[in-house]
Length: 384
Ligand SMILES: *[C@@H]1O[C@H](CO)[C@@H](O)[C@H](O)[C@H]1NC(C)=O
Ligand SMILES: *[C@@H]1O[C@H](CO)[C@@H](O)[C@H](O)[C@H]1NC(C)=O
Ligand SMILES: *[C@@H]1O[C@H](CO)[C@@H](O)[C@H](O)[C@H]1NC(C)=O
Ligand SMILES: *[C@@H]1O[C@H](CO)[C@@H](O)[C@H](O)[C@H]1NC(C)=O
Ligand SMILES: *[C@@H]1O[C@H](CO)[C@@H](O)[C@H](O)[C@H]1NC(C)=O
Ligand SMILES: *[C@@H]1O[C@H](CO)[C@@H](O)[C@H](O)[C@H]1NC(C)=O
Image (cartoon, rainbow, N blue to C red; front, side, top):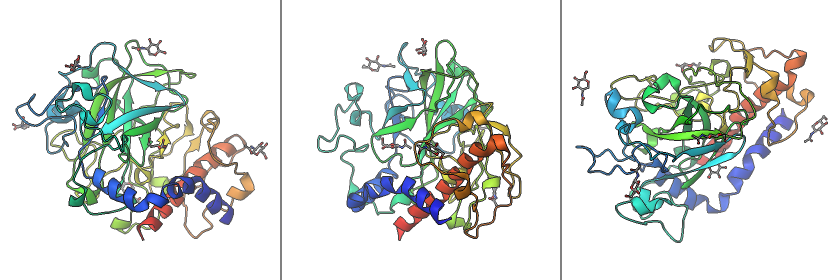
């Protein structure tokens, strides 16, 4: 177990320790940003030029969404404000796509069409919310960042897209820390239909950071450099299966997770919610709902040979060999090192299938689970 713990730690630590020198500054900045309304900005988005005057109410792309009827919240009610033809956000399969997330269009490269012009801070060009009053906010630390997501629908007509059509394909756990935010695109993303796909940015912030709110910005997107034609699977509801200290859940429950393609969270509106968590337990795009940091490589119809219905005492799913072949960026773990999984006293009711052809797949699954667990431990230790 020690070996795994160490390996898992080294996989996580560089990200944490790399910033430790600036920890005070960063946690201040992060907790500030996590409280500020932000949007995904790109000419491919719906509502690119919508200002606080466009609607009878303030419906800027950065305005949080809550307590709204479906037409008001879906695509931020910006379907009548489509992007110009040809403006598309490219998703290079197996590579990162860099998005710009900011409190104001003037803080992005697209400031030219912003009413206030260029408000970027020359001393910190990556600040998503320049000139915001930092003193108004208290520090909550790393755990204030709960992650954001990009989802895709393999349809070229935004009006035809239904909430169930979206599948989360990439997550960034440290969103919205910096304006430029990388989203790793899964290597096996299939090509989009003619005219491209429809994507959306989703974010729900920490309960420590203000009221219950959703963020959604739709945009046109297109997968480039595809090497696979296996379609994205029908997305399912994510489930709350990770460590959840505020709710006194001290262990994660991997068998309770949804594996494979998962829908975004639709929460706290009047209509078509798919999440019903309370005010202080928002659904979030991180390990709590089995959204790993980065590309969601297991969202395809052939990613698993079998996914049992999730439940605390269910069996774990079997990753298919095809998914296991996706190269992992970190370390090489051999079977004997992995075998004591669970030996740290945590009980796993699920019995991973260790059949010959699934060995690597299960190692990957276990590594993910270990990584998730360690990641949250490291995050927790940062709080104290
Ligand atoms: C939202 O829907 C309800 C029920 O259909 C309706 O009574 C209400 O007027 C709607 N609100 C808005 C702002 O459209
Ligand atoms: C947004 O405004 C800019 C500047 O007025 C204009 O060039 C651009 O075409 C507009 N984009 C959309 C999608 O309306
Ligand atoms: C999240 O975005 C940040 C800022 O661009 C980047 O440094 C980080 O690598 C991204 N995380 C992942 C998992 O891609
Ligand atoms: C999407 O990308 C593919 C592959 O590069 C390309 O052939 C297609 O023309 C692109 N579609 C759009 C609408 O940009
Ligand atoms: C399992 O997931 C469901 C659905 O998200 C959640 O309500 C429940 O608390 C979870 N149970 C455990 C033990 O993780
Ligand atoms: C991983 O381990 C295998 C088996 O020992 C070895 O063949 C391979 O070269 C190793 N890969 C790396 C990247 O160390």
